[in-house]
Each structure stands twice: as C-alpha cells, then as structure tokens.
Image 1 (cartoon, rainbow, N blue to C red):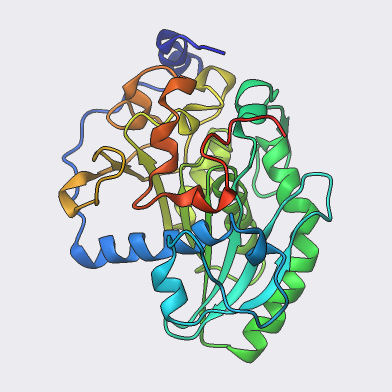
Image 2 (tube, rainbow, N blue to C red):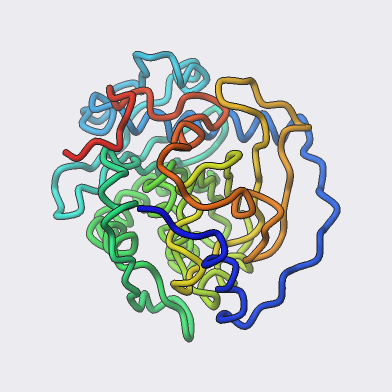
Length: 305
C-alpha cells in the first residue's frame, strides 16, 4: 500500500489547520537522553514471550541483550497479560524500586503488516473529552485489559504509594500506551508519564489536544519510520505533541544533537515531512536508541501470523 505525500499534505486544509511556522528546536539534555534510553528498554522487554508470560516475581531479562539497564536493577514482574483477549494485547506491570516507579508496558505487534496495510482505522468514542475520537483498534486493545490493569495498579501503588506511574510502548504498544496513559490520568494517576516510541496516530484533533494538555508526554519518531505516518492526516488523525524526532541513522548510538523537539499536532518539520509511509523504510521503525523488537525472534515482523 502506498499513499501520496500530497494526499497527507492536503489534509491540513480539511482539518482546518494552517501549517505551523518553523520553530527553533529545543535542545535535549544529557539527563533527558539517558531517560529516553532507559525507558525504551522496558518497551523492548515486552517483545520477549518469557517476559509477558512470566510468573509473578520473575526477573525481566532480554536474551538479545537489549534491556541491560532494566536487568541491572533487577526489575521483576508484578503482573503480566497476554493471549486472553481478541486483540491479543500483551505486556506487563513491574515495580522499579531504583527509580521509584510503577511501570506499565505494552507489547508491539508481531504482525505490523496486518494493521499498517489492511486496517480500516475506524473511529470510536472513548469518552475522554467532548468531541474526542480514538482509533477503534487501539482503543479496544486498551479497553479489553483496562479493568484488570487498574486493579493491579491499585495494588502496586498500595504497596508503593509514593511511586510514579510510567507507561511505555513501542509501535502498536505505543499506540495503546498513549490511550492508556490518557485514560489513567483521569482515573487517579494525573501525573502518569508516557514514553511512546514509534507510535502511529491514535486520535482526532480534540483528543490529541486533550492528551497534549495533560502533559508528561514523550513521543518519539525516527528518521523516515513509516509507522508514525499512519493513519493518514487525510483520515482526520493527528499526533499528540511534542514530537522527539531522532535524526541519526539506524544502528547508531543516539546523541543529544540527534534529537529535535518539535511542537504541534501537525508539523512537517519531523517524521511526517520525510515522505509517504513506505514499507521499504521499515528498518527505521525498529531502531529507537536500540533494536527494540529484537525479542520478537523475527527480523521482518511484517510477516502475517
């Protein structure tokens, strides 16, 4: 499936937006970079079957070596979920005592081709704000596990009342994490932090603005990664802001100068401006500070399963 870049560009008019002026990129500090590199490792761990099907109390490990910092602090499984819903939403909750955080992590898809090429991207009403619409599949993926996760989070915080909630995910997992964080902020966790790596668009303009206004959002894109370019602007979907656009090539250690912070729900200064979403550029989707889906055991996870 190929989409014209000019189709996406024309959507700006249909959405009632003018293109934003170019903003001076904000510098990323070394401390921020270290945080970005750390939290993505929890997202990387979600791709390991031994993690998202682990017994409570088991240590999180990544046999491909892409979550060394998480392994070093000895993080263990508090709760995990998989293979129990029609959406196959998978992930885990862990309590990170080193960083005083309860972490909720969602796994990305093993079959990105299915939803990138074939998904209808239909709207649904999530009930988060007036005029807000979310992408049906992403919202449903959260909804089917929400009650159990909220119950487990309540237990985790009863044991660790001063900790913060951190929600992470990569790819499809980032889409679910974005909507989960937005929902949980209205359910007793107003300061929940979101680290969304390579997320597709999940919301219409009112919902995107609502999530942006909540704050504590860190949404990452990488060079010409095709996944954050869908669903198309022409379909009425936009991103939350800001965008942390990683400009360094694949398989290269990211430095502070390799990240541009771009504001706005529609901007062509970052990933969106790199052209149409082409499957041939999928390699950029896998490298976010490290090879995130290494645990999937499939070098080309576009394969239909």
